[in-house]
Length: 329
Image: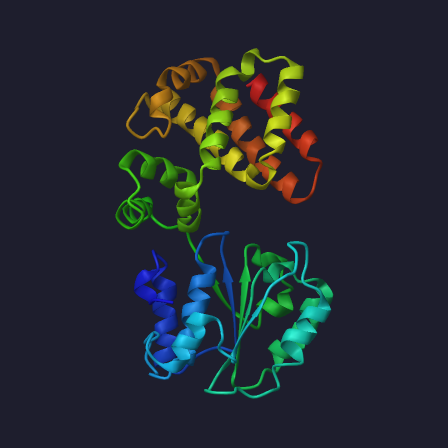
């Protein structure tokens, strides 16, 4: 599993965890809230391994029998709960894997730990079932709820848990990690860092992804030509994007960063801080033709498009509205 030294950023959370272990002030329930790829799973796993470690230190020793069991995924007192699909976690899952199991005492050590991934996908019925356990847990039980949208949890749940919010990581730390650990070239590390927007997991995925280059190239071509495209050409572009539906937020973020470059250049005429330096002529042309209000409208429309897709609004309709806003501004 490694140690807390392997975690990039999140020093405040790591400090809190170590102090809680040292001072024997471990809570019965935690919410780790952060974007996909922010490091929730790694932090929860290290916290759990520390509690289960036979050495009794403020982080896992990685040598004892318990640590080896955690590393192999076979520790009997560490239970992982995850949705069978990315739609919901039903009440039966919570009752079976948590409520009906938690009263059985630990097999080996002082703790029995549950890590519920995508906890924000629990149905209201499932959350109410979990609430009874969170309200009166056995003294040996610790529950980790990993969420991307912690506000989806019932207030009765959040009020009984310690909330640990994962913040964005500094770009300098992300770039250093990509270059030193993954041996990513300087120019590519810059690009991946900019697009990751403070998310180390996302930066790593982008650095390793071939599809990201395809999405980036297609979005840039669209941005360069959209003003002169006819409606039928826009519809054809939507069909191409539909193939990338699982990575559509990457697509939106590329467009977002393009327009931030346009806005930055329009306001300052500075080039050094641009992400799309190699497309400076296109950036200059768009900055000249678009108003500040128009650029802000496009950026706002991108945020709205993300929200609409998360709310399961029709994909093609969302993209048509977005493209028309871009075309007109």
